[in-house]
Image 1 (cartoon, rainbow, N blue to C red):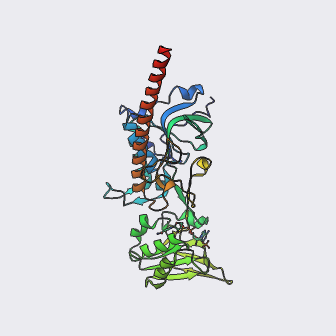
Image 2 (cartoon, helix red, strand yellow):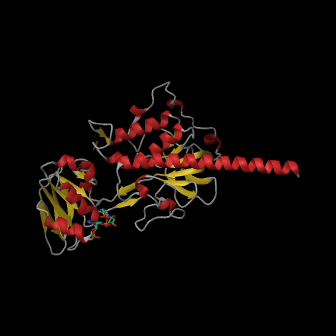
Image 3 (cartoon, rainbow, N blue to C red):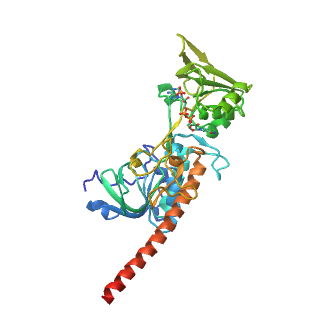
Length: 366
Ligand code: NAP
């Protein structure tokens, strides 16, 4: 294996220097073994491989590691999930003062490392779930896994404006549940015309003095009942046939410049927050050949458990959840997936030992 092909295990997360989270000497985690297989070019074998290092993946890692399953997390080049681009998190239980998203994810990671998880900062580019051990490839290294937990999350879609990127976390957000609280008695805008935008606009009326709902067409895509609710809500003002061209402000949002889509012209709204609600994309493409998805592209779990359609592969977090999409629900699913994987391994390993025993007995009598 060349140096390039070695799995990279480091405390650097998504280009952010989280070295302050590196474990203290002597607490065991500093010596997370690279494993002899990583220097010889042999495939890396594990009983549990977890794909994704957001709240679901790292919670699964904590549970699997504490069950002595020595999980390998292939966490992505930009690890940590959506919380890495979230500033203040005030709704994650246990942090009454709130906590910065990257710091919270650093703590998840530290906790997973503490119990012996191996974390690889690479993207999975190919999988073969056709037989066991399951095979996954990341950064030109092959991983072989008895069980796999897929926890690759979902990404919010953005408009793609430079000003939107620059002001993200400074008044631009894609999560009303996370950030609505910061806009008490302020005027804000919501962009989008689907159920998410309608729901977020209504939710934000609890805090904001006024919610401007901006949609690029003259008809909403969202459900009729939600349309009726926004249309009759005294705090919601509709701006149809309008598309954002620029989010205004230097260090904080001061407004949004809109292009008229039905006639020439522009207009400017004065707002202190802009919520983008134009949909999410689950990070499921690499598994498309193997795992079933719903009509929106989210992976399917069987409901009662986190089992996917492939025996031994489990799914957790936002990649199979278009409904709740919260850090705490993702963490809960990660816990469920690790317990499911542990029980699955136990059942199959007992079964395989029994089969080997029977085969041995049969050859002894023949
Ligand atoms: P969605 O239904 O795909 O709607 C996305 C909206 O964003 C559309 O109105 C679209 O405009 C607009 N949009 C997309 N790209 C844009 C751009 N670049 N600039 C401006 N506008 C843009 O997504 P969603 O609202 O997140 O809903 C996803 C699914 O979840 C839907 O099936 C929805 O029913 C469901 N959902 C259900 C609930 C609920 O039942 N409580 C809540 C939330 C979501 P166009 O209309 O012009 O294409």
